[in-house]
Length: 416
Image 1 (cartoon, one colour):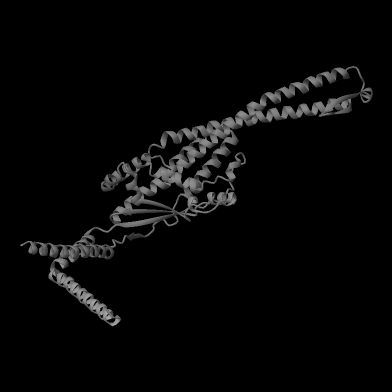
Image 2 (cartoon, rainbow, N blue to C red):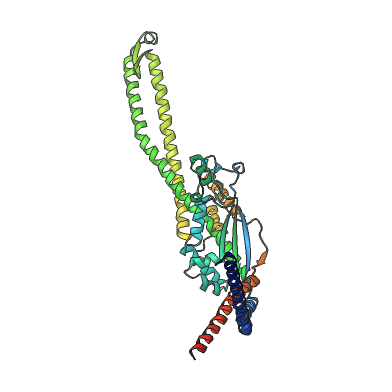
């Protein structure tokens, strides 16, 4: 066979294939036209039903409260007590680093707090939300969402190995905290936001206060332990110096002052030997005894003061421990503290109490949102997008059903 004949054969085959493709395409179009009404119904009807359903469903609403959680400036602590050095750094702010943020979320979505919210929602006539979140913190997360601004970085996704940079990232603190509340109507949003706000602003700060009080109790216990541990050493040193003084004075008995200047005694300082006249040695020992007696007296005063602070902070801690399980608020705790001011007569305890009350006031002011009445926004239902997705999926199913039906009909016709 010549090359020209081969070319002619290939051309004929190409024309045959093209004709066959045209026939197949026409067959497909005929099938689609034949089942056009079924395809139309199976495509448009579901999308129409979804669209109408979404339009008829009640619209959800949301409101976002923004809290300024930046650390309070140290310069703002003008009324800090001179008896409590921590007052210059602990000013009642949120101190919202990543650890505290995670603790905030875990407390809010905890079973204990869930029970409080359920009780408040029931009292406000929001039974439908009670059923939604009852014993299910995941449903509560759909109603109330927290967002730290700027968001905390996920170290597992960062290619950072420098320890200094890692410490900086871990020590980053949020500047704002957004709390978004979702409800099924504007009326529900007002009630819901009131319940959530009261929970966050009036109750939640007390958990942080309780943790601080626990740390204070441990610190004062450590201070008392240090004083008790040093008490024996100071007492022993005083006994030693008193013994030395007694010996020196025995030497000086019956010796005139003029002669004492001629008496030189040796004493050791480390590995060196020094010599001083007798009367200088007596003066040095007397001065050391006075210092030791002053240290012992100061330690005893510190011991009494820290003991009073330990008792006072233990009383604060017990008050919160007993009341936090109920609807105890930070304002009620402040009233409790104010009532104690007249109970204590010691000026230093009154100063400490007044300083602590001011810190609680800072905590209250820091727990207020930037805008008291933020705007309530309707949540988009996504009607067009969802209806479009249903339309595309239904169209694919309808076309598949049309070709499947046509294929079954042809198979039955061949059998017959």
